[in-house]
Length: 473
Image 1 (cartoon, rainbow, N blue to C red):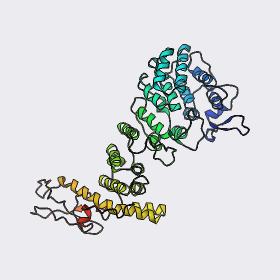
Image 2: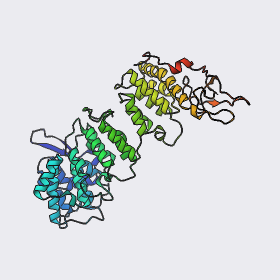
Image 3: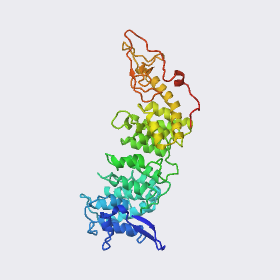
Image 4: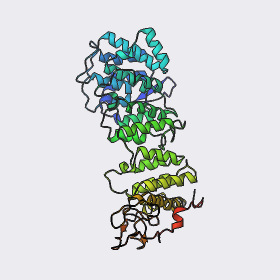
């Protein structure tokens, strides 16, 4: 539902969104003869009824002798439209229609109603517990279904501290929860998208994204979201929830790169087996303000997991990472150079020529292109030198005896682009010519020392020395 001020100042006007046309929600909304979930939600959003009447009407559907309407039937279009209309009312309707749900006694419903109203109006965990003790309410005595709905109340209201407290207090989760059922479009449209005017139970604010991160950190670390987490839901949790995403209204910086809040969220994602792809990783790496932030991110989400299906990065994937870092407005020149160096060192096979050129052409910005080239000019050779040094311990002489002595030099290969010998192990790229696969030459019989450290593509002094600020942006 969309809520907007009335033209005559008489009160808010509630309309259905265009995408509800001919849906279960629309059919119920247009029926004025019965007050079921949709009508209750609409009247509450319009201010025609208060919280007490709203709770009475919605929760009555869970009561053993509660009202039954012609709309209380299995849904043709699924529960998502109802949750997008009203997350709490949709969650109650979902439980009421579950085949295995056992209707509750009136006394149980009344106790839960008091607890739900308390959670709706109180956000402080200490005050909530004190009020519960004073009124004889006990969250630990709830059925799994009612515990689920109590958490949904806190989620709707964005009562993050109370949610964090209750998710550790209430009984164990049922086999399927409301948080399992929340679809990507519901989450995006009702929680993050700054352009919708959907009626929800908490206002949209600059903290919406960071609040969502806090809430989903707790959900991911609990049993209230079941595996598998995939498809659009995973996309929301990985990308669309992000405070660094360009179209959120997050400005309070409480969940910016490097903060405890965002680090905890990343750890929760990694613990559940979720991983960013390279374009999304580039988006985050471009928001880092230090090399350490980028290093911690890549430790949680290793590059080999970002390459879906294995193989080498495509030009698009490569360019998304490179341009995300080069176009950063968060890191200074030295930090961007360090982050680029870290990425080139850690992610093998990045196409740093064609991808940068292609993306710069898309942006049609020559200054942007030179900015990318300038950073790569310095970062690529330094990253390549580190790679070679790191791989010395894997090199062998022709007799099979390994060596890791400092004097050992990498086996030389041939750069396919410039046809010159370069001192790199198999599978590494030529720092000057980007993503060129090298074929190592066999050492001649009887040769017992490695080729001299010579690189026609990139002079050896360029590989090791810090070139200063030239080319930084």
